[in-house]
Amino acid sequence: MLELALYGGAVFTLVYGSRETTKDIDGIIRPTEIGQRLVKAVAKEQDLPDDWLNPDVQQFLSPFDQRRPFPSKEYEPGLNITIPTANYLLALKLNACRQPLPGYLGDEADIRFLLSKMKPTSVEEIEVIHNRFFIGEGLHARAIELIEEYLGGTS
Image (tube, rainbow, N blue to C red; front, side, top):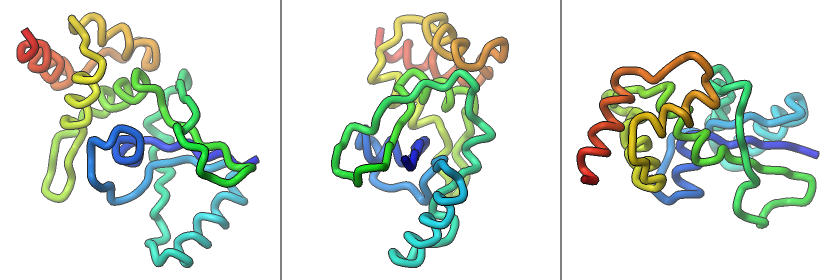
């Protein structure tokens, strides 16, 4: 069984439709050796850069991750594709909370999108979600600002 865990922009594009594109796909494929061979074959076949599947996302993941099956059955038998739950994806985005840079959208638009879907009523509600995955780390000041901006706009 080949397992592919998708994260980041690919999830926002494929699952939520909140983005039109993403420059690469953040994902982890296992077993790693077989997965890497397949990633290279897909890159060659589809004329993609060798790093189209970005495993660097692994450094940002929580040991308490929460994933669910990708909501499509249009892939090959023997391939299991998962995505993070909305709560886990929000926790990941809040934990990173990267600001936009030239050529990079950052995390703020994704955070705002998820907040609009989840409709929290307090910063504390989001802190509870975040702390499930990133125990003892707390929210960044900018993450709290984004949540407060969202809450202020929904009153």
